[in-house]
Image (cartoon, rainbow, N blue to C red):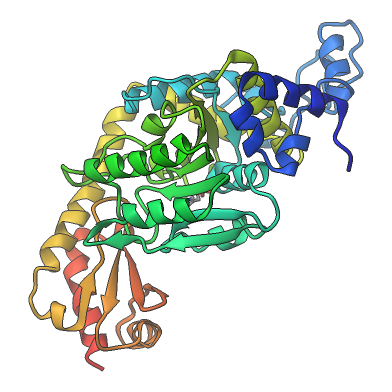
Length: 423
Ligand SMILES: Cc1ncc(COP(=O)(O)O)c(C=O)c1O
């Protein structure tokens, strides 16, 4: 399809205000726009008119949603906050509230950002970011331990991976080397806390990551960094950087565009509500350029899921406004942290080191072990058949979601792994 007039106009704003961002867009990103003429514009113009027959919803004789009480009465909300459409951008109050939360939890975030656009949880945001920034066959640079679903989400891209760890820390040199090998446009994907390893960058790691990216930007490369912050906040060690790297990347350099993908999924323990956010941070972001980015993302939301569930967004906003939220989050965090500490304690059992070793971990839901004497897939099957224990095998690793096992069962679980490794 040809590029539309509206997309051309939007692109010219980016070219003028933030040429680095413009040069990072894929063809799909350049074509993306939010349709401000046509049905939406005509509907907006008709708002408040006596006979408004523009909207694709049904209203009762008094102008309220023609809803079904069996849905609305169980929703906990008025009909309009449950069954009506939300904007493709997401509900404005929710977007503002989420930005406040990002700022509060990332005090280093000095530079300008867009307002978050609501996505159908984080996977959807990742998919939009991938389409907007990476052309078919285009490269994405990321550590070699990543969430398996990236293979589906970024199917159109080519992964250029580097070893995730070096000397028990994030492999900054691996990242630097990849950046050196791929001059021009560079798209990096970072995920802290990481799935599957449960590793988050330490303060030192972050310094290294920032200097590697800054060096590359100084050479004139244009860099987009996607920050998959799905497990944000679940940091369990003192030396871990307690903010998103987004907060530092957003103001790093005129050649660096930071994209934050986050949401309620794990951060607010609401996996099935499907509320995520996509936020851009950029050193030289102007108001008009921010609007263009929000428009493009919202156009892609409209072209994929149309808009995100109103009921979920209403619920999210209500929870974010609830003064009990911080305490409740702290309580769940405490539970996960105590499981993390228990895993650390259990792993100090010397016997285990004959059969497996943990990969670096300090955060999130998971940790991985590398088996020394047995094949991971055979051990996984044996665990399931003989010990009623389910884990994920990836390559020579077993991934353990300690997030879903009560603290008192963790020792037993690792004992089962040990026994299964013994044959
Ligand atoms: C690293 C990572 N990113 C994103 C997601 C997806 O989150 P959502 O359920 O919000 O799409 C997950 C879920 O497992 C994940 O592990």
